[in-house]
Length: 113
Length: 115
Image (tube, rainbow over the protein chains, first blue to last red):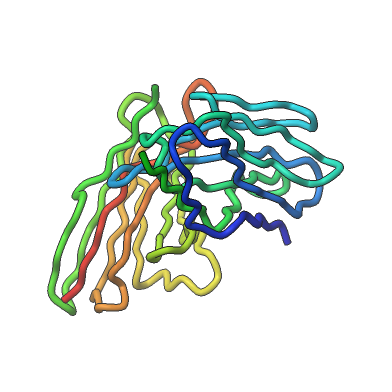
C-alpha cells in the first residue's frame, strides 16, 4: 500500500542554518504531496503542497519539489529561525483513496539561537 | 482561511465514563470529516472517515462501538469515547475537507486523559 517515510528526529540546528528534511513515498498512480507543520500546543497546519511531478510548493521560506523519478518531496529552507521549531509531517493523498492522507512519522525540528 | 475548531481542548475523566469531543468547521461546509489519534512521538493514525448523513467508515483495528462518530451536519462531527480506559488517553485530532480549495483543514486537537 501507499506509504511515506521521513527522516527521524529530532533535528537540531542553529539559527540561520540550512534545513533539509527528507521525505520519500511509495504510491500507485499520481498522488498529491503535502508538508504539514505542528507548532507546540497548536493544531496541524498545511505548510505547502504539490499536486504533480516537478511542481514546487513554497510557503514561509520553505520549499519542496515533487520528484517523481526519486519519489521524493524533501523540505528545505535556506535560513531557519527559532520560530520554525515544530514537528513537520510529510503526507500524500492518493487518488485511489477517499482523499485519505497517508502520513509520515513526523520530524521534530529544534532551532537553537 | 478556513478554520476548524474542537471542543474541549483537553479533558480529564474517570475510567468507565464516556467523553464527547466536538469538531466544527467554522466558515465552510465540510463534505468529509476525519478523526485521527496521535500517540506521543508518533504520527497521526486515522481512526475513521465520515460523510455527512452517513455512517462513518472505520479503519481496521478501530472499535466502532467504542469510538462513536456522528456527522450530523455539514459543519459538525462528534467523537464519543465510550467507557474510556487509561489506554484511551491520547491526543485526538479532527480534520474537515471542504472549502473553495477543497483542502483538508485540521482542528487544534483534544487531549484526553483517563484516570
